[in-house]
Amino acid sequence: MLCVHSPLHRGHAGTHEIYRGELVPCFEKPERADFVLQAFQRAGLGEVRAPDDHGLAPIERIHAPRYLAFLARVWDAWAAQGGTRDLLPAVWPTRGFRDDIEPDNLVAQLGLYSFDSGSPITAGTWTAALAGAHCALTAQAAVAQGARAAFSLARPPGHHAGTDFYGGYCFLNHAAIAAQAFVDGGAARVALLDVDYHHGNGTQQIFYDRSDVLFQSIHGDPRTEYPFYLGHADETGAGAGLGFNANYPLPAGSDNTRWFEALEAACRRITAHGAEALVVSLGVDTFEGDPISRFHLRGPEFTRLGTRLAALGLPTVFVLEGGYAVAEIGDNVVSVLQGFEGG
Ligand SMILES: NCCCCCC(=O)NO
Ligand SMILES: [Zn+2]
Image (cartoon, rainbow, N blue to C red; front, side, top):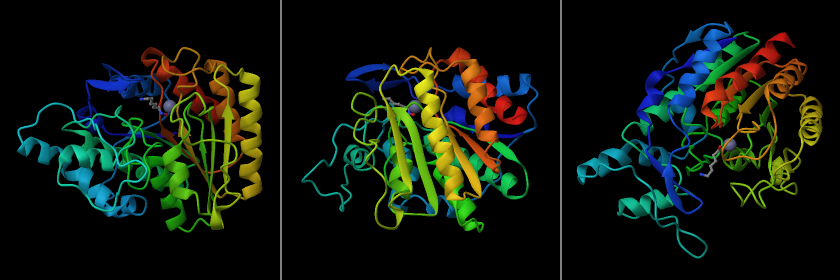
């Protein structure tokens, strides 16, 4: 299986995030990708290739121009003001505020384009996010050209990023960008399955009124788990997209039997959709030892996940999302990919 990876992720290295109201060291750190890369190479799963430069056009198919312009300029604007520390928002346009006018104030702009204070922007964030999107696009191109599967090994992750907002450590929605590339390449029906512990609120928002991309997510119940404000089972799509969004929220602490029951339901739905390609938001923070999550998957379950996805028989792009047990993230990701390869 091809792995697409860029060392440019290392430029995104925030020091602290606000987690549940407290300033703590970042959980989403460069070592995550290093450990996955080492495990992938150790397992001999395939070639590791640098991403091609796909430019901005495929990214503009998903994200709003004013948001991309903001991400591209925000650090330089901050540096021009003499700023050096990581950028975190402190004010947001919640209900009753206007969000059609972009304030001149930089901290206000951070709030306009974000939904949490846990995703620091640093000098290398834009470059890293852009490289991550190009990793996903390069993986998608390889699959569109005949590869059975490919893995986009990038950070920061993407599934919390919406059309014009960042959060949950995510800035560009790599999985959504890859799914759109399949559509733009002629696929009439694409399935996007999010198996990260946290609901892919950004991906849901992006495809919510569309029937060509079926979005499904298995995740910790948002009544108690991040992102809290989206991811309930009654969110089934809108307009032309009604019936093409499915959430499987599970109570924190749910056992693996319940998790795989949800996976089975989602896989059946993918087959019923008549999907021609599959994009997987592969978060492994479902791992029993993950520091910020509360499911119980371990190596054998990750292998079983990969095997089940292989049984769908679809051209598949895996996109790395979460997973913060840094010592185990590599083995957990490789277990999924090995299960898929052997499936
Ligand atoms: N800062 C709060 C927790 C963010 C979760 C990020 C994640 O793993 N999403 O899938
Ligand atoms: Zn997650």
